[in-house]
Length: 490
Image (cartoon, rainbow, N blue to C red; front, side, top):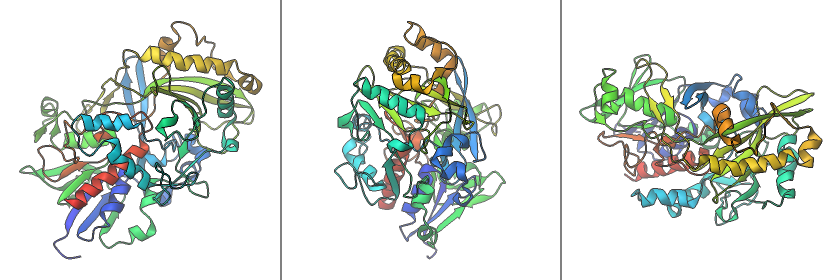
């Protein structure tokens, strides 16, 4: 390997970090060290590998960081996986891309190389689509196995919603990742392998062959406290146990909560905020100041009998509401697991276009959990959600819902003038799609390099300048692939 190899440190072995480690270690002149704060993927249990148990992982034994996000009306939990594969090991498996206009908006804002025509090939190269194979918008040879849930895999509640919407005459979408088919009712594509097990980015990218590379080191249970910087240049990272790990370049891939927190602890962030903690300000940047998320009400229901189905929590959804693709809504189970007598589930409606800006800030002390403030709902949010409530109310009255015995957990009238605002006051939940806390354009350049600090990059959902209209999981894979290419070409 030689002494001239450039040392790359990747902080976080999650959705993006696993991709980065696999791709960067393809270059023999790089030595890549992946630092993951949790355990390796050989510790995955059934709550990770079995899609039907995904909801149980959120309150089960899988290593998860639970932060709290403050909203205008209360607080809601924010979940992140703290294990190899990260949140790709504990999410709902939904692999949506967002819309071309989302990425074209990034390019229009001056971020060259991030328009739809630039990124679509990256999405295609990452997937092995077991339904469509190779098409102009899908791939058949990527590391991540993708297919859509089958009819027989739907839970009873999800099937009732699906059937009710189609009976209502809503358009059926065969491929939600084909933007020309939206809006409409469709089935989530998900990352599962041919045996029906969850395909995390760790399982897909960090194969036994990749792990055997001489220039790749993987360290688990290695929690990073901060990035070490001297004279504006990265020197490595410091673990919470005080160990200094040297490196020539550092890439933060710890997620939209932990990456900005690490930057701020390292002296990169809003100057006045950092000085309150006695942190030496190395770069005064708006880190953590522009957080976005997909928020909306989750209305609780129950029905008679078991849940049914063998798939995961995200299976069927309606995409689109008042103005094209701006809301999605679907049924999903909640933990704990259902009994044979009854099943609890939610009908959730999430705003996909978010104009609000939340924040991530350091906690009561430098080492405490961060303080997270939710983005406010956009001004037209209630009007947009009203269309979703109309469809959910139609499902409530459908033969499919009545035959199943579906009932709201408490009486309500979804068509009342104040139904949406009342639901938002008490039932707002997060889609766990936190983004934009270290965005390109203000904290990073278009190559995801931190402004003012040499040798430091970020590559995860936090780099998104605006949130895409879709689940952010696959977007994190795309970002990691593109950042790896940029680093290897440098």
